[in-house]
Length: 194
Image (cartoon, rainbow, N blue to C red; front, side, top):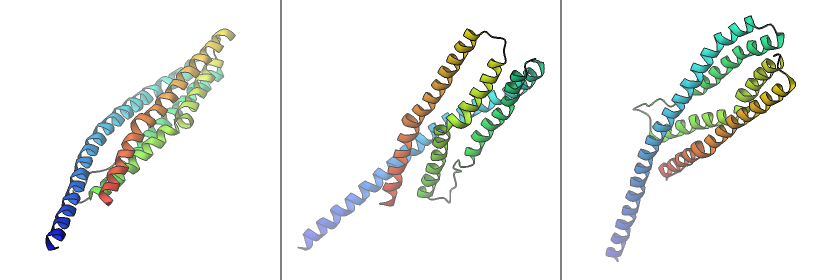
């Protein structure tokens, strides 16, 4: 009987080691995925912020030179819109995980999850803070122009198609990029808890 107990203890010990090795592999893979994902987010944010910073002085100049008050209002609203885009993108960065040698793996993963959830929520609400304000500015500019009715209708159809595509891309990013990495994060956190 002592041999049987010894064999069971040895087999249980082997299973525990396999789980911890798998958790370590999962953690390494997840850390690599998070680094790649963070690089994509940084590139996106840099592009959006650069475009917003360029648009602000252009909008101010155009608002000054156009004659239509609706167009002036539309161009004028681009300035707070661009400021809002910059603010939203910068605000979510305060949740970005800072690597600390004293920090446990679980704390790192939990903070990473919180950051990714904030980024994902930013994309989920893109309709309200990104698309609708831009659509309002563009609509005011187009309505204030001297365009004919057909041109206006075609412009609005084009705007709806463009903003619809932006909305689609953001929803696709949530589904294809954020949800899988969050599932992987949750799995790794669960493995570390066990």
